[in-house]
Image 1 (spheres, rainbow, N blue to C red):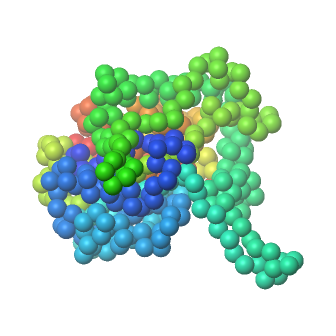
Image 2: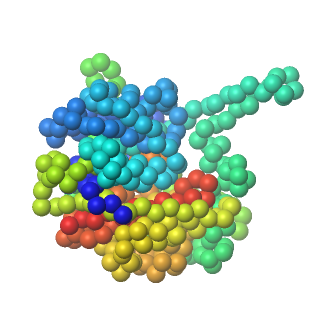
Image 3: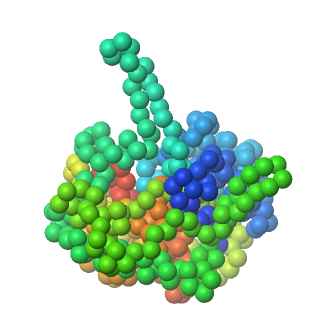
Amino acid sequence: MLQKAYIPYRGYYSTPFAKWQGTLANENAIVLGAATSKRFFESKGWDPKTIDYVLVGSTVYQKQWFYSGPWAAALMGAEASPGILVSQACSTSTFAIYQAGMGVETGLFNHSWCLMADRLSNGPHAVWPNPNGPGGQQLAEDWVMDNFGRDPWAGGAMIQTAENVAKEYGVSREECDAVTLRRQEQYLDALARDREFQQRYMFPAEVQISKKKSILLEADEGITTSTREGLATLKPVLPDGVHTFGAQTHPADGNAGICVTTREKAKELSTNPGIEIQVVSFGYARTKKAHMAAAVAPSAQMALDQAGIKVKDLGAVKTHNPFAANDIVMAKVMGLDLNNMNNYGSSLIFGHPQAATGARLMIEGIEELAVKGGGYLLFSGCAAGDTAASVVLKVS
């Protein structure tokens, strides 16, 4: 449990998420993320040179990704600040935020910036020599699609892990369709009154078209509106499965940033010093082979135990839910209200640019609690390799 790490109120942003092969498809995620963070600092009147350390969360290789941390720091105006790359699939942002919190807790640094940036569009294609192959043939990998399609340890696609868990916990097709429709309703709440809720935290991404022309991505793109009747007509992705393409997330592009600092610095940078956001605890888990969604609940329970709280103490729950069964199983195991998780949106609806996904969901949870008057936030999500990670934040 941490005592000293805080996030300034409104000391964070998420860009809208762009559809796969959409507006951000040709942008280097690190360059775009750093540029967006720099524009965000300018809008706040923050001096990036005061940042001690930069943590860059990214999961899909970009050109010169090798230099991600210090490169992004320099591009955003923190030329003297070191940086590190954090990469663990969908739990990247969870670990990065808590790692930043531990840095503050131990006094290693006082003021950090966590930039979460990914572009799943136009993923890289890797080629390795294969000296033992016939005719010296090469080994090749499509970075994004091959890894979605096969876990080298479990041997199957990610959706197979969701179907395995759905079968074990008795999740039905009807339940998956119902939770998909509920998550859509919650997302539509964030769009009400000219996107009033999203305007609390969303910051546009700027794409340079030419030396003299740029465009702004100001709202999510690629959102599919579902109906009960429409979902019922879709075939399962896997034979005898409970998930259709309507009941799973979609690849996306985007970035998000969160400041993690001391209590005193957070008050200084906050747009409302009366609202405090504390980084409290972290939890992690790994479940049995090819059962990824089952890891979420134990990771969440660990985070609650570390914080010394129970489910009844939570004011908001946000999850990365790549498959509808994720939320259904977590709710069953932990005794959560399935319909009141993920208010205002989730990755099931707005897509999944991996590193940025969890950061956006945490930010939405913070804003939900700010509206409610405070409370504990639990964010949880599965990650590649049948793992999961969770974090508890306190808004007061």
